Length: 364
View (cartoon, rainbow, N blue to C red):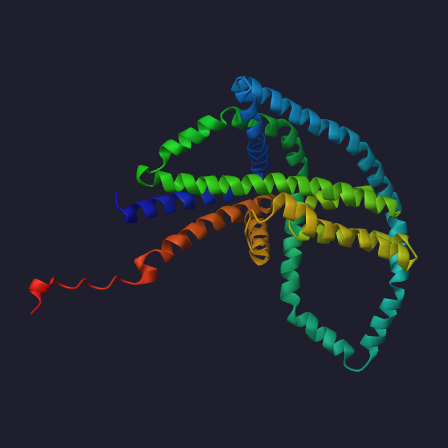
């Protein structure tokens, strides 16, 4: 088979795979979670194998311990989080009234501006020019809300399907790797293996490092917000840490929620500033200590590309796409860097080599 036919074949197979993933995106969550757990736990199983355990027993032991620990953590946190959620719902009318009263001066200022000459016309012009954008945002929000109605299914599948998927993937991990390796084109097997090792190192470092960062940030925000007296600080803090796997957006969501609660709860600017200070300090710790030490530059992607990957992943695959956006972008980055290296060593970049001079005995 010629190189052109190989490229066409692999492109068609990739297109079919992407189509199937988009078509089946609603049921991918438990399988993606199981794959991630198996990927994270595989080194532990390998160590137990080297210590003398069989792969089956190592897999059963590691999987059982992981999910028992997971359930224990939930058993400790869920009652606390549930109680805070109930209190929040009970206090919601009071918070709404407090925000409304504090926003009164701003509303009066807005009315004064609208009543002034030209103010209403400017607002009307702005609304008309951005009406299409607002409609798009509303549709996106409603679509996300409808997708959020599947949270119950995702939670059930996380406890029922994910452990099974993780166990079988973890048990057969080495077999799967050998099987995939046997499918590689023999002429390029060394190159593909080298790139696969780079991808494996990138994903392993990023996933394990980012998981640790999220846990530490959740503990820091939860304890910090509780100490400064913010109602439901533990829920807001843990939630901010957990969604910190989404770069930039995770902290922004937690900051907005935390500041809204602080404005509704406190009358003192000092207390509101202390809540803001917890988030600022958390970002300083994450940006200067946690992420550089635990994640480093393993992803090796520009922040703009990370944002683009998050938006594209969410548009194509929803919540699962957001989870996979940065790892897939890292894989694509490895492939693009290899392609760029090959391009810079090719005649397409260097130009055609100069024609060889004829031998002296053949010179005219």
